[in-house]
Length: 380
Image (cartoon, rainbow, N blue to C red; front, side):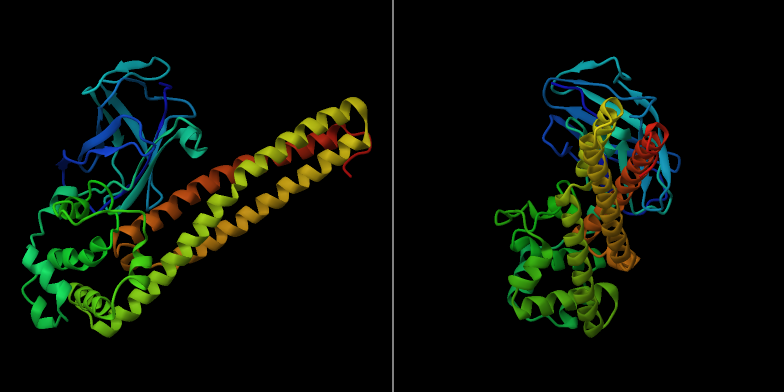
């Protein structure tokens, strides 16, 4: 198969000490036969461990425009340190099912909660063939080991109106499991390999599907179930039910709005449309120099201004997304798995937007300067 590059978007809990996780088994998001099986992390470095499950060629860039880097949620960029049992590009290494390799990076910030890892321009451009691993939790083992609830516990919360007295003996980790049970029963798909995914997959009734937790909450839960969720969340946070109910509604509204804006941004394909207009404008400008024809000038003029207009629309849409994102507090964005995923998706979009905005503005400026320098009529 074709050699491809990695793009990871990883959700994380905070970490301070060295830790090792070896049971993630997260497949590359487009279905290629390679998994992240785990990681080793200390205050200086993070080593990601990979396993191949079918024949493929693999290599990693150690220099140049496609060298990988990490961006965490504090906007800190961390670089590639080295590779083990895999070659640097352009030399490709043939691997078979069961082969393993590791890649080492500078660790994210000590207080990072999420980070994204892109392998240079290939990942930023979302070109075909680029690898992606998304929403992989850090602190995986320590979080998972906190919880233990029984089928009896789950049956009780599902079939009774809860009181604070019912919940007084549960830990925060157990309350989190009980709260997410209502979403699991409706088929919410937790991140593969996460603590919630591993826990609920123990039950034969769990059948994950493509559905938002906001859709479940608004359209599929009874009033009693919503009240139970509010109480569980209140006890978990040590707040009143009234405070939590208002907070939940605010968070759901913010995340729904952010999800909608990101989907609109992605579906419009701003960068592709600008690139197309720039290519046409550039070719029309070359033809205009050769023929001095108004026909080619008009093509250049219309497509150049079309590219500039779309670029401005993209900036406005991104600013709208940034505005909504900035209104999501730290507690809100760490509320649950889906909220963290949407927030991290928005942060990754900012990195991509910054890259494209800089690149395509420069191309627009270069085309316009070239027109001004060579046109007998000057800039018109």
